[in-house]
Length: 507
Ligand SMILES: Nc1nc2c(ncn2[C@@H]2O[C@H](COP(=O)(O)OP(=O)(O)OP(=O)(O)O)[C@@H](O)[C@H]2O)c(=O)[nH]1
Ligand SMILES: [Mg+2]
Ligand SMILES: [Zn+2]
Ligand SMILES: [Zn+2]
Image 1: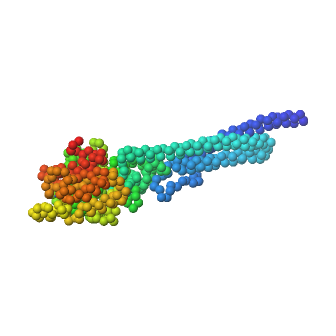
Image 2: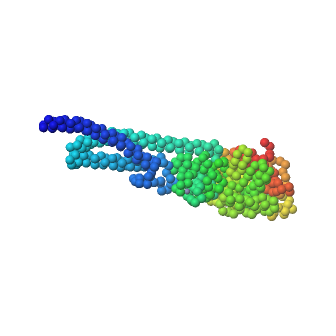
Image 3: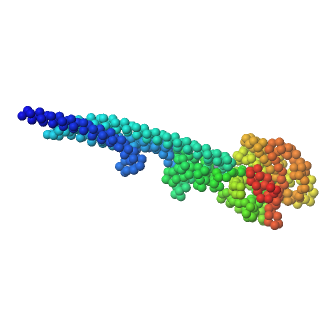
C-alpha cells in the first residue's frame, strides 16, 4: 500500500515541480505584459478614444482669468494634465488586474476538495504576480518617462516655435515699416486686438500672437479657429484697438501696410481743412485716371470726406473744425509699389494756442512730417501793404487768427516736449489762398521773409527741423475741374520721403 502512496507522492511532487513554475511563469508573463498594456490602454483612452465611461481628469488647467477667451494650447498645460490622467486611468486598470489575480490566488486556497491541487497554482501565481508586477512596473516606468519626455520636448519645441514666429512676425512688420497707430486714441498699437470671426460669437481676443493659446492658430472658447499672426493672415479678421478705454474698431485692417501720420497745424481759419479736402479731391482725381487707388479706410472717414469733392467743385467755403479731439481721416493708398495707410489729423486752430490743448494731440509724436498752414492775409505786415481796394475785396476771406508764430511756436514746443527728434522731422510750411493774392515768380522762402516778415519763424524752422520746404497753395478747383497744381506739388514732396511717388512732377 505504501508503495502506492510513495508513487502518488512522487507524482504529486512532479505535479508541484511543473505547476509551481508554470503558474509563476504564467503570472509573471501576465503581469509583466498586462501592466504596460493597461498603461498604454489608459493612455489611448485618455489621448485618443476618450470613451464616455472615462473618469473625469483629476484637474484641468484653467486659462488665466484676465487672459483671452481662448482655449489653452495643448502643450501649455493640457498635455501634463493628460499625462497625469492617463497614469490614473492606467493605475485603475492595473488595480483591476491585481484584484483579479488576488481573487484567483485566494480561490486557490479555498477550493475545498481540490485545494491540494490548486494551492501550488496560487503560490506560483502569487510569486509570478510579484515578479511580473516588478518587471511590468519597470516597463511602465520606462514608458511613462518616454511619454513625459515627449511631452516635455514638444512643450519646449512649441515654445521655441512660438517665439520664433513672433520674432519673424515682428521682423516682417519692421521690414515693411509697419508701425500701427490708433486713429481714435492716438496710441501706438503693438498688435491689433481681434474679434472672433464667428458670426454668432462676440468674444474679443486682445493678443492673438503665438503663446499659451496657440502657436499657428488658436481656438476661441466658442470653438472657432483663428490665425495668430498678421503673417498668417490674422488681418482678415475684424480688428480693434487693444488699449483699454479705447477699443475702437480699426476698420482699415492695420498691419499690412506702413502707416503715415500726417498732422496739419496752424491758426484758426488758416486753411487746414480746405487743404485736406483738396488733397483728398486730388487723390480721387488720380484714382479716376487709374494712376493710383485711394479709398477711405473706414466708414467714419467716408462719412466726413465724402463731401470733399462736392465742396471743392461747388467752390463753397469749408466750415470751421470743431474743437473736439480729431479723429484721423484714414485713406488707403494703393500704388504700383505698395500700399500705404494715410492718417490725416486735422484739429481746430484753437487747439494750437495753448499747451493744455496741444498736449492732448498725442498723435503729434507719431508723425515725422508736419504741415503748418498759414493764411498770408492774417500776417499784419503783409495785409497792411495791400492796396486799400484789394483789402476791401479780401477782408471777408481773411482769417482773424493771431500771428502764425504763435501756432508754430506752441506746436513746435509741444512736438519737442513729446520727444520727437525734430532733427529727423520734416516740415511743410504752406501759405494758403495763393489764388487770392496773385502769382509769385520768385522763391517762396524769400517772399515769406521779405513780404510777410516771417524771418524769425523761417530761421527757427530751419534750425529745428531736418528739412523745411515752403509752399504756396490754392486749395481750389480750376475751371476745367482739376485741383490746382500747387496741391499735387505739396503732396509729392510730403509723400516722397515716405517712399511714395505720386503721379506727375519730375521723376
Ligand atoms: N480761396 C481760397 N480760400 C481758402 C483757401 N484755403 C482756405 N480757404 C478758405 O478759408 C476759410 C478757412 O479755411 P479752413 O480750411 O476751414 O480753415 P482751418 O484752418 O481748417 O480753420 P479751423 O478749422 O477753424 O482751425 C474757408 O472759408 C476756406 O474756404 C485757399 O487756398 N483759397
Ligand atoms: Mg478746419
Ligand atoms: Zn485706440
Ligand atoms: Zn468665438
